[in-house]
Image 1 (cartoon, helix red, strand yellow):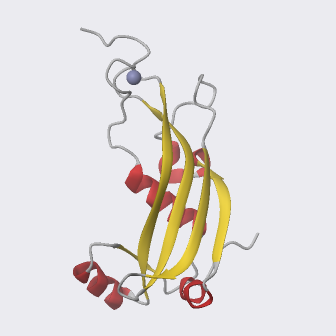
Image 2: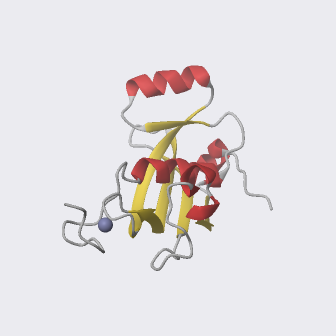
Image 3: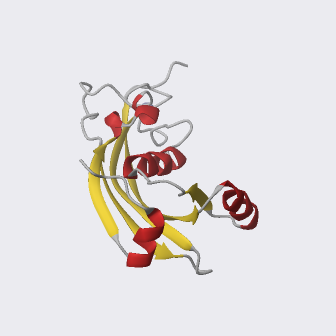
Length: 149
Ligand SMILES: [Zn+2]
């Protein structure tokens, strides 16, 4: 399966690509998820689309759109917590380490080193990691069981 792509080429061609990943298959996210056999924890599908664009300043960038569900564990009741994800972010592309450092300094935007082929799964995983709550919790009063007093 050929999935890795040249980020700068995607920008110059205006290409986009899309696919589906399962949160459970992403190594840096898997250990934060509810067990698959727990009720309400089955849906871990994330649809993604990555497109080559120019940032507002005209820099090469990628938009990364995520749409799906991540079954986290509520840290209050320890029951599965369906975390819907629906977001679009834009990351700048850097040609080398020097440009990466310069862009990081100059911009509030995320910067990705694109001196080699990019793996969509890694980009998607990076974005997901940024969007997941550090301490996931159900809304107040929505926990499965009252917490210990
Ligand atoms: Zn809860």
